[in-house]
Image (cartoon, rainbow, N blue to C red; front, side):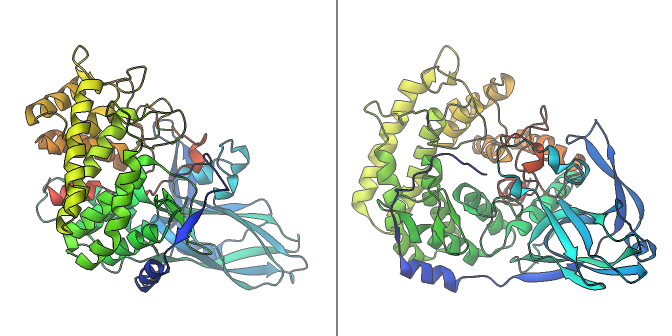
Length: 525
C-alpha cells in the first residue's frame, strides 16, 4: 500500500532505544541463491487475460551465448517463477574493438504487462521511480555486471539502446542472486486432495517467502516497508508455515520503539537509513498492533515480550476510545483515518466499529495474561457498550444489513467486520453471512486483504464449504491466470483496477494476499 496523503511535518515522535536494541538483536540472516533464466520469450497481447498480455517461449536461455545484439534490439528472459534479488550478467563486445560505451536499458517485470507496455506511457499518481528499470553505460568491455538495486521480477527485458556501429554485444551468464530471510521450506500439505488448493497453497508460500526480508515487507517491489495491516496477516501465515516467530517479534518491537509522542503506533515504518515511523496514522492499523501481539503471544507464550509491549498495546486502546462518540459509535470523518479496503466509495465507520470490538477482545486476553484487572474491567465494559451501540445505531432491520455513515451505506466490509466482532448471536451472524452471499451489496471488495476477512467471517459462522469455494473462486482465479505470487489488488470483474491510476504500478507479490495458506493449513481445508 502507498499513500501520499495526511502529511504533517510538525508531528513529534519518541524512540525507545531498549526496544530498538531488542529488534536489532532479532535481525534475521538473509538467505541467497543463484538462479538462471529458463527461456527467451516474446510478449503477446491476449485480451482474455486479466492484464492483457502473455509470454511465448522463443528459445532456451542457454542459446543467448550464440546471439549478437545491436542498437535497437532487445531480449526478454523468463526466470520461470517470481524472484526477488540482484541481477547480474557478463557483457562482451564482438567485432572491432569497442570505440564507444554500450548503453543498455533493463526493465524488470513481475508480470508480462510490465515488460510489454512502455513505462513512458505511465499515468499513475504514485512516483514513476517505483517502475523497475535501470540504464547502464559500459565504458569498458567485456564487463561483469551486477546491478546495485534489488529487483522483484520473473521477466527481465534488456534493450540495447546504443553502441558503436563497429561492434555488437553478446550477453552471457544472466542470473539473479535471490534473497529472503525464510530459512527453510514448510512441510507439504498432507491432508488436501484438491490440486487447486495445493497450487493456491504453494503460491501463497512463495508470496510470503519473497516478502520475508529484514522485516515482513508489504511488497518487495513497492513499498518495501513494514505495514501493520500486512504484518498481522503475514504473521498468521508464518505460524502455520515457516515458523520464523522471531521475525514477528522483531517487527512488533520496531513498531513499539518509534511511536507518536502520545504513544500512537504508526501505520508503517521505513527501514533505511534508520528506523523511521511514517506520519500516516490509521485507526484500524494502530489497533492491529494489539491483535498482532495477541496472536504472537498465543503461539509463543513469550511472557517477557508480553509484559514489555503490553503498555504500547493498551495505549492503542486508550487512544481509540477517544474516537468513540456519545452514542457508542466510532466518529466518522472525510479524511484518511482508517484503511479497511482500497475502495474510494467505502464508508469506514461501521467496519471500524467492528475492528475496534475485535481488537478489544484481543486486548482482553492480553490483560488477563498480565493480570491487569483495571484494564480488564474497562475492556469488558467497552465491548458491551460498543456491541449494543452497533445493534442500535448501525443495524437496519428493514434492509437486513448493517449500515455505515450518514448515507447508510451497505458494504461487504461493514457486515464482515461486525460479524468478526461478534455483534449479535451466532444464529444472527450466520444468517447475515448467508444474506451477504445471496444479496451482494454494491460496495464490494477490491483486495485480497478484504477477502481474507470475508473468508475469516465465513469460517467464524461455520460455513467451511462456502469458504473453500470462495478461496478457489478468488485466489484460484489468479492462479489460473498465471499468478506466480498473489497480487496486491484483484477484482475479477475489473482485473485492471488500480487505486494508483495504473496497473503498471500495482504490486504483484503482496503480503496481505498470502493468507490462503493460513486457512488451508489451520482449518485443514
